[in-house]
Length: 395
Image (cartoon, rainbow, N blue to C red; front, side, top):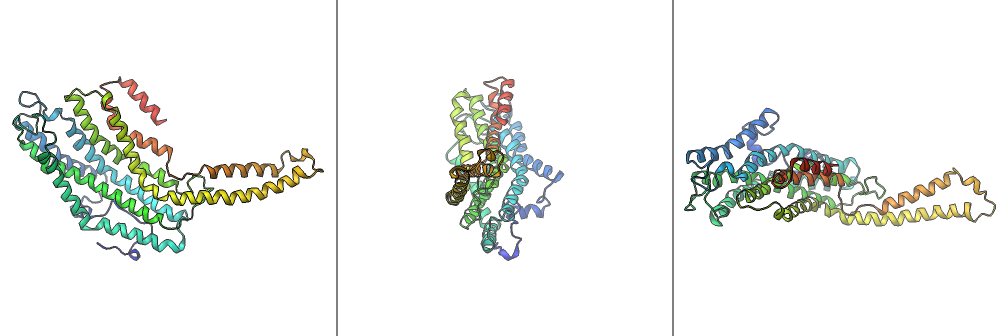
């Protein structure tokens, strides 16, 4: 679906409330889901993905107890994390991510970062990503991948077929609950995850197009990022997505600990890699502004050095080289104060970021990535120590 720049409001970018799936949800009254409707949507997702697995496993006696299978459904933590936590979280994240993207898009214009002669190019970039978001092809590819990947992983490659469980018999044949998991539950989960990946790629593309414009960056800006600090602080809006991705993986960790006697200590490097990858992926789209930030910092240093040099020479001639100057008059004199203030501003430019990041957002994202792993800590640490470490991380 093509979108023309003249047909939309400048700065009105929504990559969440768009797309064929969103339009289909609107037709059934679940598009603009708020309050009770959002709760209904989440309930429907659970009823379609998790409840049938429970019912089918109960009918075959594979829901609990180890008389028939080694890993019954209710002792399979992956199912809980994916369909009772991740799916609802991915749905709830929509509004938070949408608001974050909208604020950041408008801030480019409100802060005067986009020159008037570049506003048409800004609008074209906005129209381009919205056109891709609304295209039927994009979500068609996502739908195909969401259906094919579970078949390849579970049937073709045979992931999770090492032992008899609620999804496979002792002869390694797939149970009815296993087929529902492969053909319905996993495709829905993968569709949500892949659609968020699509939104992320579109946002990264939008930022890349904006970075090609000559932005009005200010080396003396208080955010020490030329005025682009809002992009780094805005990453906290993606905390629910980070938490969801972490929960998908932590469910696998829990399975290994519960059923294969894997220690939490042996998984510590996996956790470090997980957190590092999440942070790198989120910050990667911001690297496109590094060149402009570097140029802004260098030019700011040169220009301000020239200004400070002239000021300092005048100060030197008046207060240092003039033999008739009374040193006592320098106390409280505005000239001395201006020298100190200019030195502080110069130091401020020197500390300007070339790679965008925000310490508070970084802490929040790390906490979001670690939160789904907290239940795993119970296998190694007392609850009081766990809470203490989390409180320390949030400080």
